[in-house]
Length: 398
Image (cartoon, rainbow, N blue to C red; front, side, top):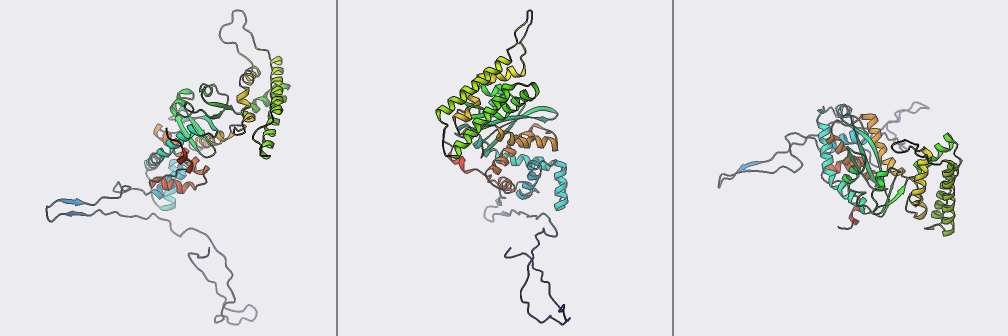
């Protein structure tokens, strides 16, 4: 730093060679080393707000000054310490009791059991409007939107955290259901018409107005399983083909091309159909036996082949349109932190806490994707000015 906060000068008093006094000799130069550290004592600053009360000498009316809108209680925590509580608890998944212990150890300030949930609720309330704007953006954006879901426990009962995201925005929402009820409640996929990337789970495909792209990372794992565990040679050939197409798309993008040649696409399609047909020959479907009731159970290979045959355009969407990604890894990264939370802190004690988590995690993920400092963004939110990505201004009106 050009201007350090403190300066400690270490003087040379005697010559090392002859022991002569150097106290009156001017220094030739200074050799500098800087130590970055915290102040000796970290403590909270207390600002007391005093509202004047005056009696009008003319009419006797009592008049009281107004407190700032952010000062609502006789005693309360300000936005900076509140942001730190949310930062530890919601961003780094430190349990509430340990977060309170950190506040005690850092600042000598005891924190009650209800304080951190209350601050989380305040934060969630402050970022709700941004959450709604991002949700609207994810409905309308031309960029592919990634969808995924994972199980979460609330008071010991299984719920589901659903996510929708792009490279710059994230929305998370927790719901008791995993399927279309939750997707309808989230309100993004039912209204979306653009590319929507997800795994092979059937409820996603019920929204026919959207353009669907299926995750090839999931498909590759299934093909590897069939190749290694069941010696299905066609699976290995189809796996190699998918990776070859992926490489061809990457080379084309590096060469600034927007599409593959028509003949190359046709060749890939023919080879794809060939290896699916080879798989069908090696795995004929099971037929119903005399007297058998219910749905006929099919093998893992047969079920996969049905998807490969019926959803070729969705599987190869990345080949037809370079905007479409090869996999759904972005969504998996976005929900991974929810699983970390569950491992570190366990489930949620209440639905309100889980709801707040969804709002705050959506906000934090979006903040990080846009290169902002999380702690600053949390402070700004509690101060009444949450971070709003610039791209939200471009959302077309209804």
